Length: 639
Image (tube, rainbow, N blue to C red; front, top):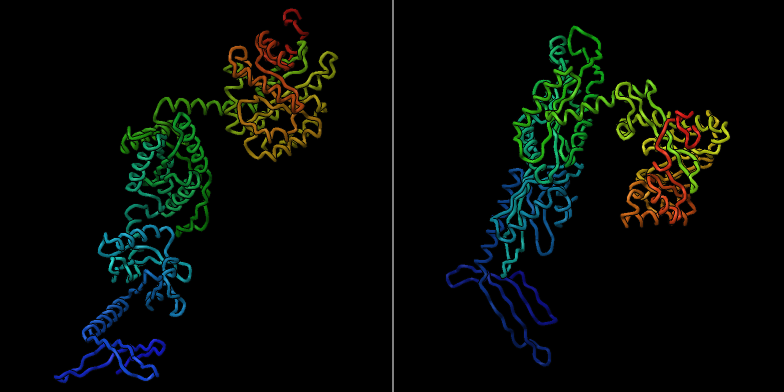
């Protein structure tokens, strides 16, 4: 007998033993018995159950031998073996499995988390879905490619395969056995083949084949989200001369640098591709759903024109006969077409962009053209406005108009300064036509500085006139101007240089200014307020004003927007808003003024509700300084 154990506490013994049969053969028998004792504790009987387990033991030995051969074969083939007890979470990993990940024999614990913690987070959902499908009996086995974390922190591509090898009586899986094979070399080869098929070998940009695929996806996305996209075809001007004179090696160096600049000029989700030779394509997605898409596409194209036209430092040592570098200048021409949905095919969009690009070249190069004539007209007009506006800043073509501000008795208390542009061909241009462009280009900074200087100088001149020495001046300050780093220093320098009384100067800010960095706004306002400068919040009620911010701002006045004043007699909502603004100003100890007052009935309503300061056509339109300085009620002819 062997393998025998006895539990004295319950008088039970179990074990296996060999039994010789009548024919001389031996059988392996399992014994399970109980020993009986009499009242004096003496052995008196035993009950045993014997079972022939010879065949079962042979089968188990064969299975163990088969598993060992299977594991040996897989190890020899370079695959790592794992054995997972699904119920307990225990797992066994083979030596090869650990080696693949860079671990020694004793560095991996025997639990399933050693595997799960090493699966790449991006791959885990797919891996678990495949395993679950097999466990649920939907697939004969589980197989999937995924990445695993190695000891040195790198990711190893593996092919994982597994199979449930045992289930309980209810079909619940008990044990999952599988392998991992290192497929990193095969993946690298496949990736290399894919890059050769879809990417340009020189610039590593998507080639024409992948470009068309990206364009189809952009069209599909545009359809789903009902947003515009833009296709740009970019051609380098006179690139052939560079290639012909300095060689293709230098030309390739130039194209690689162009690629880098293009990628830096677009958003992360946009596509830059090489169409061939010196032609590049840019796909812009998720533009506005309205006409603003034209402006957005134009903005990117202008940025590209700028960055591409900057000098290139080319290494001429690539040619054996040259030993230095060359600063090379090159411009580009861009054709643009917009799309929304699948109304046009990818091929048609390419043809349109190509047509627009050749129009840009024909127009003198270093420029952009839209395929749509109406879009191009908008762009051309904006370009002309920008050019003329820059000239206006250089030539000093601006002038100031003054609109009276009055008290309840109709007496002038001051004026709001309004800038006008004396265009040499178009005549007087109102602010609504050029201020947005000045804001977009940053020209509002020098224009705003000139307005403030001129207004302060005019205040100083009025101080010498007894009938005008009491007047104040309100100057509009744009959000971009106010956020400029040295705005406070500029204002203080103007105050000092002109000698103006700062208590007669009021800066008008808009609610849009409060959308960003309120703490910086408060800091700047506090510094200027300390010098005596006043502040008015213009267009109040039309934008965004958090009362928690509003009460912290060092304001002097709220201005009721003309959009509320216009219908204050006919629209109950506008009337309620006007009354609320007056009440709010009074509760915060602020003055209040209404703009856009055009009728006596409007003035009477405002006065009845506590607003006693006004500005509007009822009291005077914006006028040049010389007219504003005339006695009230006088005309130029009478003077």
